Amino acid sequence: MASLPLETTNGTEQAWIRRTDDGRRLLVLGADLFDAIRRDLGGIFSDTFAANLLYRIGISLGRTSYLAARNRIATEKDFWQVLEEHLKERGFAKLVGHETSAEGSKLRVEVSLHDSVFAENVTSRKPLCDVLRGALGEWASLHYGRKLLSSSESACNTSGSEYCIFLVELGSEMNQE
Ligand SMILES: [Zn+2]
Image (tube, rainbow, N blue to C red; front, side, top):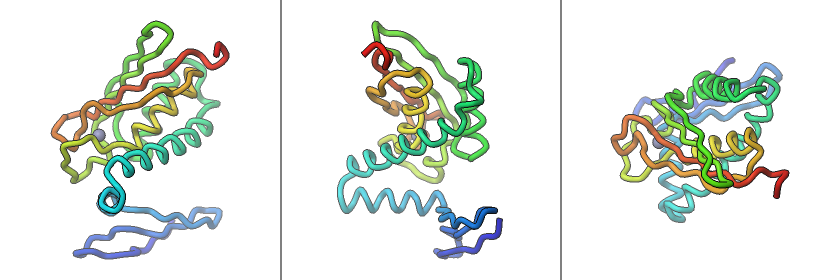
């Protein structure tokens, strides 16, 4: 794939237009530029708005990517393996741990990631991996066939934690509602 820098700041390429083999154009953003956009959204609207918007984008991306990978997922083991490959191949993060537990009719899914792209060169007191928070929530919701109640990030690499830790809460099974 050929690519040319779209914008240069202090000699660092920030964004690129790429063409796929079938001729579609892709706008590729550097992690730094992505973070600048996030900060602008926070400044113009609010940090909560930026977090919610990126969470929604994550859910949408998660839905698309899960549905594309679905035919490779038959078992619980497959699910985690395919998710791990997906995160790694695309450069989002490394999956380092996961735990699923039932709590009454709810299901809690805890996921730990290392080296999140959204934490690259970013420090913050608040967790900032909202896209991953949404995508992981949607993957878990679709896989377990349960409504996504919430997805939160309790620790983030941006605030000094070695891992980004996500907690997804799912409701009762869809077909029982
Ligand atoms: Zn994070």
